[in-house]
Length: 270
Length: 288
Image (cartoon, rainbow over all chains, first blue to last red; front, side, top):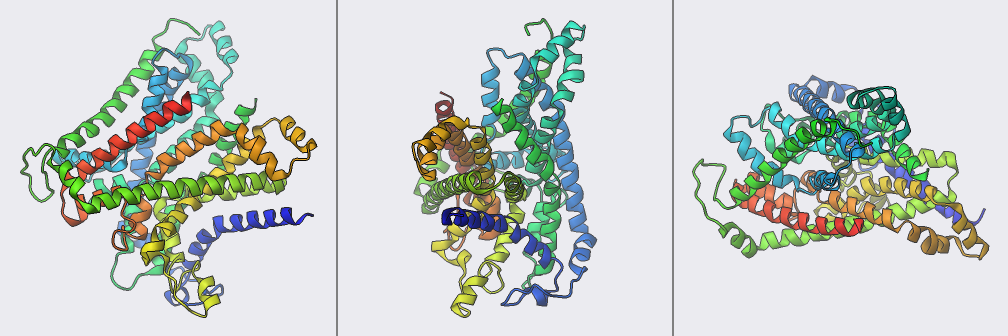
């Protein structure tokens, strides 16, 4: 084997290691007592403890944050699916002269700096008395989920072979039942990827949640970030445990999303 | 499929109407607030028109934040593209198909993490005394202390490294998939002409992928605007104002230090105008 190839393989192996090791180390630290974390030489061998994870799962603030995150993200994604998928289908299958403008408008929502949305919304929600409530957060997140789902679902619907839909029309299906019975099931795999992506996006969202909640509607990322500001003795183990809890849900979608990526590029090839 | 049906109208109009309301109301209201002098502490306000904007341009901390944001944008976008293309090409060249699949899975993990999690993971790792990333330095120097997050010269790069860790590796996967979609003939032809491996990529494959790579860079430029979570958790804009980007400064003006919502909103409006104009122009260019 040539030395160049060997170096290349070594660089890749190092990158692969760097991609996962920091997270694994955090997970390991979540199982350590503080004395095993605060060491100048990192310790690989230690007596594991469940105290950190137990503490995290026993705290009301964390459980409320978890509940808020699930409700806010779940509802926003549901709204995104209900409003985004049909619109994406219509843009993909019935293109008119505004189709390009609609696509650009949906993408341009991504250009808006989150602060520019969060500051006025905070004032608006304060004025109508919905500040620091889940409905306010859900409505705000829906802007994100609808636009992202639409943006990703348009190509997914376009890749459904037109012939299948034509055949269904010939068989007497109406436009709506073609959408329900043909387009949705055929594109289901790619659409699942788009929906999973939108979920990860709002689950990970921080700035808007930080500005729109003060106590009742805090989501998990906010609660986790606040744990670090408690007192002088940083509870490292507990912090690590909260990071692990926060990171698990998006990682559950790893399989779906990498499949989605593969299907996007397989379409381009053919 | 030019059939007469109500489907396009019933499917598109409600969604676009809702998106328009949800996006235009805050956008217009941001401009309204920016022209007033609202503060969080009192409900009273009056119209001050453009004086917030005049103040901004006399505010040295604001000008610093503009500069930090520009630096952040350049550093993260360039580093991400370099890491992505480098690793993508490497995977294409030296990894077997099975190994490629493993790497693709591993390289997607960082970008899925919440930014808050990624920021914490690396904040621990960069800890001068107990961090795993600073451990090799302590080991080699016999216990000297290196604190990348609290030095003005290195803090921005330390935070940027987390962003590149998340996006660079993810984009490497996309670059690999793009390379895999290329037809093999031009590569074969170059090989027959005795082109070296790196020459094939520099002069054949990457120029063939110019358009998708530019789109990729465009996506990264947009995502780099969302630096707030990383900076908020890792440095809070410090040391001093070394990592204080525009959204961080707007947040601290509006919420932490003085509650000057209008001042913060004026800043947000300027950011919005700058990004919308820049990206609209870039987008039209990418599409053309």
